[in-house]
Length: 344
Image (cartoon, rainbow, N blue to C red; front, top):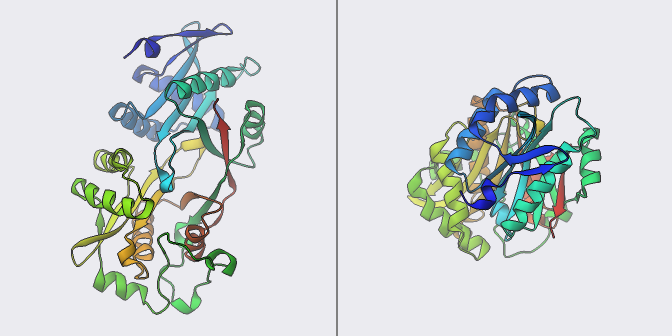
């Protein structure tokens, strides 16, 4: 741990420091004060992941008179949906009740911004429900703006991938009528999805040896090699199977597509279990064969077995083809909004 990491900074009588494993019970208690119930499983999973990938997780505590009075948790993002620039994703923030007006949240966010500058990261991103008026006010005061990503979600039991083709509602023409060199995730209208998935594809849980195939496919889609980002996702899938639910599709033994997702049992103060879809990719040589649809269908089946109720993802508003694909399989604009804060 370097000198910067060891440094403890006093802000308004509080001590800002790194969050440690010893803070676990205090964080759960403080979080339960805010949302009304403890989220022990969520913080247990998050702590386990943070300890195994400490370079990707940035977590600070606010302490007063030896007592934890606030916390902030963020994660370094390196490439979700082809994003070129790294960003910090603010995942959780909390302050002790009865201490409002002491600017604990602002002090923690300021600490996070300083860490972002040290890491040469220029953006902090997060999401929140538009109905959460308190957090909306906090983001506004802190200088966040609406982001350029559109958050979409789909209830697991509402997805249309297993319905008859005639019952499917196509995406609006203004979302699918653009020509593009990007991967076409949509299935050919002549394909029978269930026959295609059963007879032509091998869909299975991701394994460590699949990383090189994913890097190859990702490079064909994005034009860049992103081993660090792919390694991060695969490593988490191997080390925390309770969180990661990622799949790979093979056709005649050749990797043709993948979907990277994780179950989320509490990020951003959620009460219900949600799956976050980080990225999906199909080798351009296998486009128009329903691989993207098959991957999502199997993902939804697996999530239903885990009693996960909803799948959520985000895509740039200008990524019309990807959004068209999501709309085609049942996703709709979420009640959650994406926010971004530029770090100078």
